[in-house]
Image (cartoon, rainbow, N blue to C red):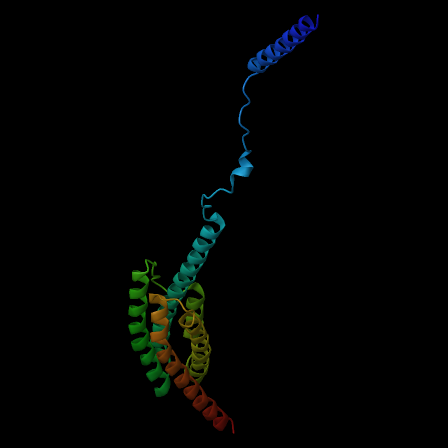
Length: 215
């Protein structure tokens, strides 16, 4: 009786083990766990250069080029105007100092204009062929004067005109730009300063003579 019971128990255990094996073999194999893209580490691709920086550099270069073009064009117009003023001084003045000053304007500003046009050509800047409208108006107004009135107004205009020119040329010369416009400005400043000094001297003489005649 005991032997029969033992066999029965063993048979039941074997059946349970067989069922467990069948259940295990019926389950699909587990797939490996994948990490999300964010866990794979930061991207190593270089970021492209900011378009804002590129456009800023181009804008700065364009602005600088525009300023240099404006300077050269105004310089050429100024030279042309000074030559015409010099001719007017020789025609309208009876004072030797004023007439000699006029000849100096013709000589120096003709040479200066050739240098300005050469710089303009090298920088692809269109060179004006005549003074500005304002400069023509000043010339026409001066042409209506004569004698001591012409001399006084002419030399006063020369002092003011060369003072303004020196300020513009100095700004260009000190701009730090390495260009033909800057070279031209630096080269012209000594002549402009000499013209201003002589204009101030002649104006002072004319003023003293006028005061002396008034007495």
